Length: 390
Image 1 (spheres, rainbow, N blue to C red):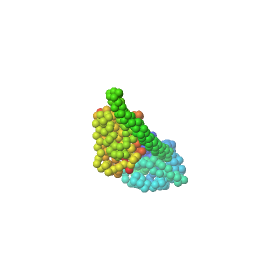
Image 2 (cartoon, one colour):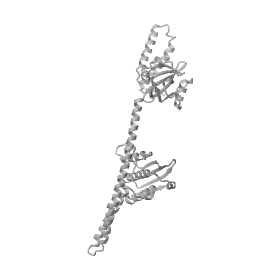
Image 3 (tube, one colour):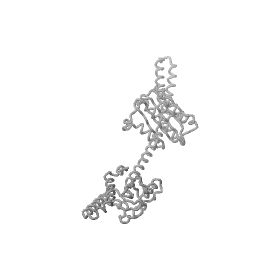
Image 4 (tube, rainbow, N blue to C red):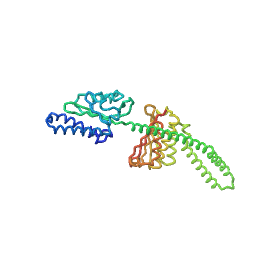
């Protein structure tokens, strides 16, 4: 593996490092031949000075290490990184620069690499913990290359201080967690608001419409009122009552409390099929009947099904859809929704504006689950969500 291809090290820096080490090896073999030539000595000395200057101007630290693990060369960037002068570390064991003593699997591989006599080139790269001269720790990205110089092996150890990158990564991780916590909080607030609105619609508007329906029935007994007018009014009230119930069900389906999550999913799919003329099959594995998810998990899974089926109706132009709920190991549940619609391309999925999909994914992630979406143009779409039920 070429060092120039490892991580994000600049190719030019890696080439300079290799050329310098190879030059040293070639120069060692030429000493005897040029021993009696002052011009050759000057050329060799100038070559060494130029190559050392190149190494010292590298942005990354470089240590040349013997096969026994002793430091033979330490460039300026490495001096600045560890706060050691080169003469303080040359001849010392390279493992004194690291905190963990390479106790892990990869670290043992590095140690074996440094002390190995095997003539097979080995290169490894990973993150380790370095030690400053004041004994404080800092993260390093490390690349080791085994290079043959005549009859022996040496190792180039390329070092990069990644403290700033780690700090940025940690800041992004914390920010991402906070944003997800905020999203989860906002979702819980929305659910509470939906519940409140559904209750008021049921108690207030639902009660008024039902009372109006009874009043109209009494009006039908009056002979002075045409029967057709009363029937039309009854039909309008029945439509209003049905719409109100449908809105209440979308906001907060009471069947979750009465029938449980699995029954609620079946009920919602039947309601959608009746309203939209969509063939909708719900398959609930028998082992799920003994599983009762936590309340917030039930709400999350129901909302996933609700949003997915709504997307099928609005965008997929599907004729049929299958909702399959099954139990997985480790108290997990999988909800898979498969439609035979027009599908969506990966390029379209990558575009912004698919807030329904993003909302489903964030809802699942906030509960520690996973959501995947696979689709192919003309071949339908499959949405799969997995979540711990407890």
